[in-house]
Image (cartoon, rainbow, N blue to C red):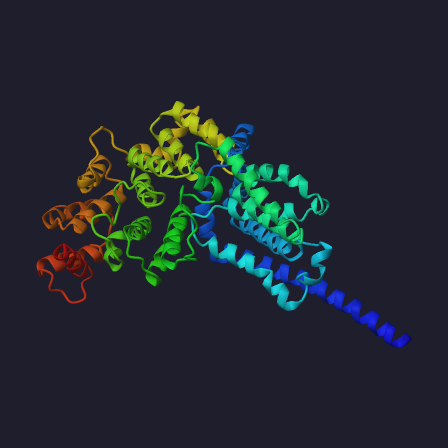
Length: 517
């Protein structure tokens, strides 16, 4: 009997220890998996989220967030997202958030009534990953904001507070306060509370619903009830909701291209373009910009997909991302006003009315190049209140105090020489002429020459292309005529009947499109 008792005690002890190791082992493996997923697989997704907000370390910014329901979850979500600027740090914080969600799901309820169904075995432990998997999949929708998983974690954390378990009458205060802090995800708290009360107080659920409706009726009459009950800050697009589309390959490839453009990783763009093609103007803009920065545009432009006349720079399109590669091209060309206009329109297209750190920085740079220091100072004042843009803003502010330093700056001074010297009316339909005028203003602007010649080929301006081939020979700096131009000339001379001609293939593609119209 004694031996059996010892064996039983030892077995119970070992089962408890193994269960504890398994418990923490699952959490550790989850954290490592989440970290690698975002840092190795999807760093561009982190950059995408970071560039569409500008978290300010000010009391006014906090109070502005707290003036709306769900404001604390939104503020805390943006606080975390600002660290996406450093990719490994952003991935680490996301990993910790997912682990917190899993731990709260596993051990959020320690009430006596449900002690027997605690998630401690291998199979139940795997079930604790289901909520994590759902949130993870939802975040594949690029418009889902981090405030949603943050609100879920906060709701579960609130429901796990032990001393609240028996004090059901306190919920009349807790629910409206929690609603204001984390938004409608307080419904998750309500559900957990009903379970904790062992279904003895089902009427409590109806009471809590009534409390939330009163909060809406009294404090939020200006918002549609649909938004008040489903969240004002969980999704980037008002009156829209998360899509169960997961991680769309083409969408995330475009986001990756924009991320590579932002970080000036031109070689990687060209390499990826050879492996995965997305037939959109955005993709063409990114690839052509990378080729131009490597001085390969004249040689290899038509080796890659060209969307048409908008393949070099897109026309103005009021959405979040379309104009970004075009704005970057304008900036490097020296078309500073166009770059500023595109970046400003992009920032104003953020549907939840947030600022963009990336756009604000580039707008300030455009103003510095143009010598508009007072308006640039307003943008810099905002950036100085952020964490990762602060040091750059202070350097730019000091630079503006000395005109000679601005002129000697390796980027701003160069752009002042490349930009237009005279004003004229902008017309996208004549973008090729604007590229040509930009080159005539400064023959050292090789990128403008490449874009000028490339745009004429895209439009099918054959006579103009042939007429200005002399510019390429005289100012292009090439040892021999670029291969792409040679191919185009053969195609023109042979009227498109050239086997294996990349330009002939493009012409056939455009001719087919016009015929379909």
